[in-house]
Length: 370
Ligand code: ATP
Image (cartoon, rainbow, N blue to C red; front, side, top):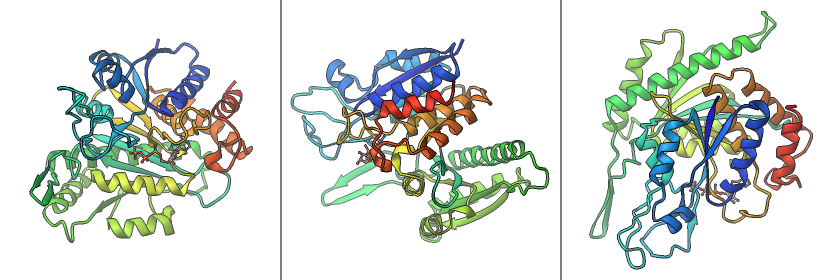
């Protein structure tokens, strides 16, 4: 029997993770759920944003669905009035009056670190019926770059260190090449007419090596070195600013993108905007091992939390990625098909222009799966 760990977290995480669990229950009736706590409310209640019991539940599960958590922004105030989604990059430790020695660190960052989930996979696919077709995957390095956590103030000068290593660059490149092969294999098996054209696998390395000569020079060099092991994958490269323009102008020219942490963070939100916005964007955090954490790209959306109108599609498509990870090859495309059919029927939450609630969208998706 499969065990899935559910970490709803804060804000709309509490609404979209139960929705994704309902879909998983529909396609995998034997699945068992274990719920675990993390986030700001958990920190306030227990003094830990990511309790040890939660880490143990993630380690024991076949996969984890993570909602979103709120993190304090900016300077260290004991009672943060301003809260934001997943708190990326590294939320500063929160310590000081009223909180004693306790410190807050983003739970998703802590999980990525704990289980060395070095790759962030962000597929961007158009499921809405209108608009240009978009079908690409951004593979974002998850552990270093400008999000290395090495920031400091020296008087009126602030410095962030951009750390790039050959080891991390090579392993993310390898993951991206493997994903390019996998997507190609899936495309080939889905197309029944042998005469139809199947896109060859293609990987675009995105960097800024013309300016960041040392750091992105090493990233580029490492990715190109790995390319030699994947002669079947067409390799291209592009500067990040040009990539932002081409993603908007002609997203069809991309298949798989591999890039560093900050560039991947920004480009994947931009790409999500091409297909309906944050509410429909899924992601996966994967490493070399069995542990993997799946999460909608959006944050805890405090502005709409508790109103029952959060779009559950990002979380449900993250659950579909979890099904792929579990080897439930048939279930994942069924879920994506049910989501596409529901959106095509105009059953959408307000962020997509509709009037449906989270529950109505989820029920409509589940009805198409039974
Ligand atoms: P992060 O710090 O993680 O990047 P964020 O700044 O992207 O967080 P979000 O919480 O993702 O913040 O919210 C950004 C905007 O998108 C808000 O207006 C929010 O209401 C909207 N939004 C986020 N998630 C959803 C969702 N599931 N359904 C509808 N709207 C959403």
